[in-house]
Length: 66
Image (cartoon, rainbow, N blue to C red):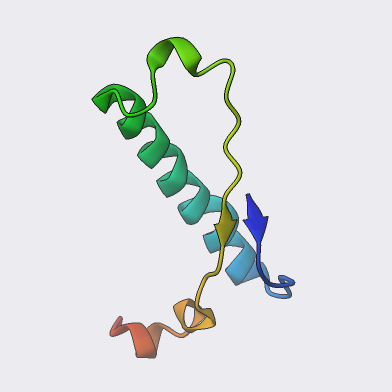
């Protein structure tokens, strides 16, 4: 995973390196299960993805959370 910003906050890092990484991994797994990524190629492929995460995720009020 390649971040598009310099991470300066522990909360941001937790979201980016936890939730976002897990979501991407599940998406790749879904693609393999659906046959979009051939199962026999999974050991031969590498996936590099770039992520930009809106800093607003750190502000629970902006997200509508209590």
